[in-house]
Length: 468
Ligand code: BES
Ligand code: ZN
Ligand code: ZN
Image (cartoon, rainbow, N blue to C red; front, side, top):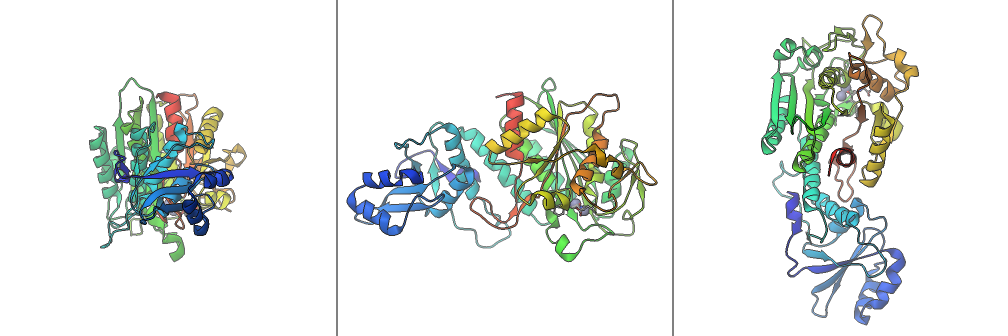
């Protein structure tokens, strides 16, 4: 629980002073001689994220110093991680640093994210973090909602596929819906066929855990409609076009898009953003069995377009096709989808920079700038229509895996675009985020494993568009 990282009362707290490298000398001069000697001999030079604990003559810490440069949440996480357990209270800057609320919010958020560990399957639990006294002027509700969302995203992704299949993912959505009094409808197994979600069914039917569509709605009907769609492939074996051992190893994370939208929804609902929110998650396992879809099969979709299966491992865009089509049915102000969709997006931008595709320039620019401000970057890639012909099928309307595979993140996005086009004309505002949802190695505040990517950016953008 992120709440455990904070304390209300400052009683007994060690003052924590942050220092930018350029004011190191001046700060050092302001100390008592013995303290100055201590700081010097400990080698503290206010390097980003480093700390120094200064004791009195009995050995009790009386002051903590921390080096800071950009003030990003990750720098704060590093500070939180490097201090021993105890209670710390930020002391105001006297050396020119501005104590604006963004900076204090980053401090609290970084501290909270540093407190995350996925140890629910372990006997021994990870070492505890120190506590931060809530800095004055910080929006505690926002910090807790955001940290809670990130914890939720990480937990959902980190939970192995044998504990987080389509049924358990739907259960997680149910818990969230109950917490925030949202409405939840889950369409399971053959009911998907009756309700006309044939593509979701085709991808998920080979698994013992039946495919399903999770549909959550929250908020006043009169508020602007925002719809989030998340790829919920609870395990991606590749299907009959089976992945290699190395390629399959991390594939419990293929519901990373679903995890993001549930985390983002939890933030929107906790902060009571005045929107009518809808979350759609096609939850499936891409499995192998006698009834699995085959390469070359032609699948029906909710929209009526037929899909030629070029590759059974390009399953994400197939399940998203039905979910996106349903998303457009109530003409929301905007649709945003999150998906661990292509390896190609990772080749283009690496693992830490989610690719943003967007059919509206203002929306794209807003998302990018909010990403930068939230230490949650996105990078725009083009919906270049010059490649649209590659998505056309030979025997069906569209092909889920164009030959050659060049520009694979773009052709995947162009495939999705076919399913967000409104029947009655007019352009549906839409953003698609192709992300890794995983840290390959551990850094302070960002442990190896499942990761929230893009949700702080999108929350901040939605808050600017619609309220508060
Ligand atoms: N889930 C994968 C994409 C993926 C792989 C995301 C690794 C992040 C890390 C997706 O379902 C997939 O396998 N895509 C294929 C598509 C191809 C067959 C057209 C890919 O990217 O190779
Ligand atoms: Zn796949
Ligand atoms: Zn996949």
